[in-house]
Amino acid sequence: QVQLVESGGGLVQAGGSLSLSCAASGIGFRLDAMGWYRQAPGKQRELVARLPSGGSTNYADSVRGRFTISRDNGKNTVYLQMNSLKPEDTAVYYCNAEAWGVRKFNYWGQGTQVTVSS
Image (spheres, rainbow, N blue to C red):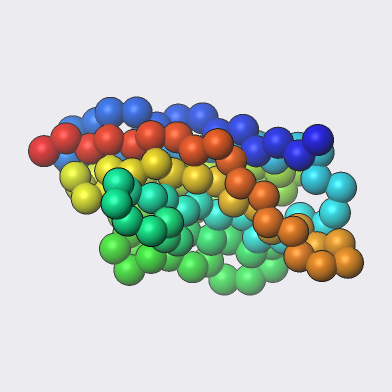
Protein backbone atom coordinates (compact mmCIF):
# COMPACT_ATOMS: atom_id res chain seq x y z
CA GLN A 1 0.00 0.00 0.00
CA VAL A 2 1.44 3.34 -1.06
CA GLN A 3 1.67 5.94 1.66
CA LEU A 4 2.97 9.48 1.67
CA VAL A 5 3.06 10.61 5.28
CA GLU A 6 3.48 14.32 5.80
CA SER A 7 4.53 16.09 8.96
CA GLY A 8 5.15 19.67 9.92
CA GLY A 9 3.05 22.67 9.12
CA GLY A 10 0.99 24.67 11.56
CA LEU A 11 0.52 28.31 12.46
CA VAL A 12 3.27 30.91 12.26
CA GLN A 13 3.51 34.68 12.13
CA ALA A 14 4.57 36.45 8.97
CA GLY A 15 8.32 36.41 8.60
CA GLY A 16 8.63 33.13 10.45
CA SER A 17 9.73 29.70 9.31
CA LEU A 18 8.24 26.24 9.08
CA SER A 19 9.46 22.95 7.75
CA LEU A 20 7.57 20.10 6.16
CA SER A 21 8.62 16.53 5.57
CA CYS A 22 7.07 13.68 3.62
CA ALA A 23 8.08 10.03 3.75
CA ALA A 24 7.02 7.73 0.92
CA SER A 25 6.58 4.01 1.40
CA GLY A 26 5.09 1.08 -0.48
CA ILE A 27 5.96 2.43 -3.94
CA GLY A 28 6.96 -0.58 -5.94
CA PHE A 29 8.19 1.33 -8.95
CA ARG A 30 11.17 3.52 -9.61
CA LEU A 31 10.69 6.72 -7.64
CA ASP A 32 11.42 9.79 -9.72
CA ALA A 33 10.46 13.33 -8.77
CA MET A 34 9.18 14.34 -5.36
CA GLY A 35 7.70 17.69 -4.62
CA TRP A 36 5.25 19.94 -2.89
CA TYR A 37 2.07 21.55 -4.13
CA ARG A 38 -0.36 23.81 -2.31
CA GLN A 39 -3.98 24.78 -2.53
CA ALA A 40 -5.46 27.89 -0.96
CA PRO A 41 -9.21 28.25 -0.43
CA GLY A 42 -10.97 29.00 -3.69
CA LYS A 43 -7.83 28.47 -5.74
CA GLN A 44 -6.39 25.68 -7.84
CA ARG A 45 -3.63 23.46 -6.60
CA GLU A 46 -0.27 24.86 -7.67
CA LEU A 47 3.30 23.70 -7.76
CA VAL A 48 5.51 24.97 -4.94
CA ALA A 49 8.71 23.04 -5.57
CA ARG A 50 9.67 19.87 -7.37
CA LEU A 51 12.90 17.90 -7.20
CA PRO A 52 13.52 15.20 -9.81
CA SER A 53 15.79 12.31 -8.93
CA GLY A 54 18.30 13.39 -11.52
CA GLY A 55 17.51 16.90 -12.60
CA SER A 56 17.24 20.49 -11.62
CA THR A 57 14.83 21.80 -9.03
CA ASN A 58 11.72 23.74 -10.00
CA TYR A 59 10.34 26.47 -7.76
CA ALA A 60 7.28 28.63 -8.11
CA ASP A 61 8.31 32.23 -8.68
CA SER A 62 6.41 33.24 -5.57
CA VAL A 63 8.59 31.10 -3.27
CA ARG A 64 11.97 31.16 -4.98
CA GLY A 65 14.62 32.43 -2.61
CA ARG A 66 12.45 31.77 0.45
CA PHE A 67 11.70 28.04 0.24
CA THR A 68 14.19 25.20 -0.15
CA ILE A 69 13.33 21.66 -1.20
CA SER A 70 15.59 18.72 -0.48
CA ARG A 71 15.33 14.97 -0.37
CA ASP A 72 16.91 11.92 1.22
CA ASN A 73 16.78 9.21 -1.42
CA GLY A 74 17.76 6.51 1.05
CA LYS A 75 14.69 7.33 3.13
CA ASN A 76 12.39 8.23 0.21
CA THR A 77 11.73 11.47 2.06
CA VAL A 78 11.32 14.99 0.75
CA TYR A 79 11.60 18.15 2.82
CA LEU A 80 10.47 21.73 2.39
CA GLN A 81 12.09 24.48 4.43
CA MET A 82 9.95 27.61 4.33
CA ASN A 83 11.47 30.89 5.45
CA SER A 84 10.21 34.48 5.42
CA LEU A 85 6.66 33.22 5.29
CA LYS A 86 3.91 35.53 4.07
CA PRO A 87 0.15 35.44 4.67
CA GLU A 88 -0.29 34.53 1.01
CA ASP A 89 1.61 31.29 1.67
CA THR A 90 -1.38 30.10 3.70
CA ALA A 91 -2.69 26.91 2.11
CA VAL A 92 -2.93 23.16 2.43
CA TYR A 93 0.40 21.74 1.32
CA TYR A 94 0.45 18.38 -0.46
CA CYS A 95 3.38 16.07 -0.96
CA ASN A 96 3.68 14.49 -4.39
CA ALA A 97 5.72 11.55 -5.65
CA GLU A 98 6.12 10.42 -9.24
CA ALA A 99 7.10 6.85 -10.04
CA TRP A 100 7.67 4.96 -13.26
CA GLY A 101 6.41 1.49 -14.07
CA VAL A 102 4.86 0.77 -17.45
CA ARG A 103 3.63 4.35 -17.18
CA LYS A 104 4.03 7.25 -14.78
CA PHE A 105 2.22 7.01 -11.48
CA ASN A 106 1.37 10.04 -9.34
CA TYR A 107 0.93 9.73 -5.60
CA TRP A 108 -0.32 12.34 -3.13
CA GLY A 109 -0.12 12.89 0.58
CA GLN A 110 -3.14 13.78 2.68
CA GLY A 111 -2.16 17.43 2.96
CA THR A 112 -1.01 19.55 5.86
CA GLN A 113 -2.26 23.01 6.76
CA VAL A 114 0.12 25.95 6.81
CA THR A 115 -1.32 29.19 8.16
CA VAL A 116 0.65 32.43 8.21
CA SER A 117 -0.83 35.24 10.26
CA SER A 118 -0.15 38.89 9.52
